[in-house]
Amino acid sequence: ALGRVKFNLKDLGVDLASFSSHKVFGPKGAACLYVSDGLNLEPILYGQLSTQRLWPGLENVPAICGFAKAVKVMMDRFDEFNSKMRGLRDMLIDGILSSVDHSILNGPRGGRRVSDNVNISFIYCEGEALTVELSLRGIYVSSGSACTSRILQPSHVLIAIGRRFEEAHGSILMKVTPMHSSDDINYVLENIPKAVGRVRSISPFKVG
Image 1 (tube, rainbow, N blue to C red):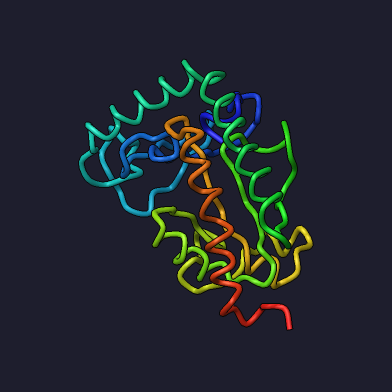
Image 2 (image 1 turned 45 degrees about the vertical axis):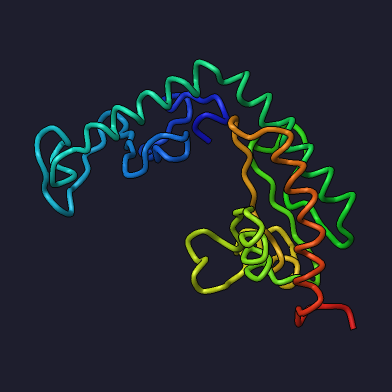
């Protein structure tokens, strides 16, 4: 939620919170860990005093500085970036649902949805095959749960919210960013129906 939702960690009352640099378009390989006052963590591997002995090895200073700069840019331009992402997100959602039969939006619309998130299920379509088909067209998405993507299982979150197996198995996750434009969205909308049609024509889930 960093860069997409405004929050104060002290108000949330959490003991621990971690954030990854690449989620705010900073360098990969950097992250931060928030530890609440009074919480004593026992290290698994002992490190230096500069990391409270929680992480061994030298810090990646350039990546950490890049992470800090990325957070500052995201927060300084929070309203601008999120307004743009919401517009692109809704353009993508509306375009897909109106052009592809048997497509279902996973999650709410409007203000209750994170500004960059588009998760849609295509019934009679295998999500991993659709991911490959779209990548051949220069469109990169993910399918299933990010932490189980290599074992081709549907997202347990979609199953938990009531999606049937074939609906969850046919889901893809797309993210918009402040760097995207309406031309990018139009390119996706031009190719999604073709890719879905191609995958459905060979899918074991197809009608009949």
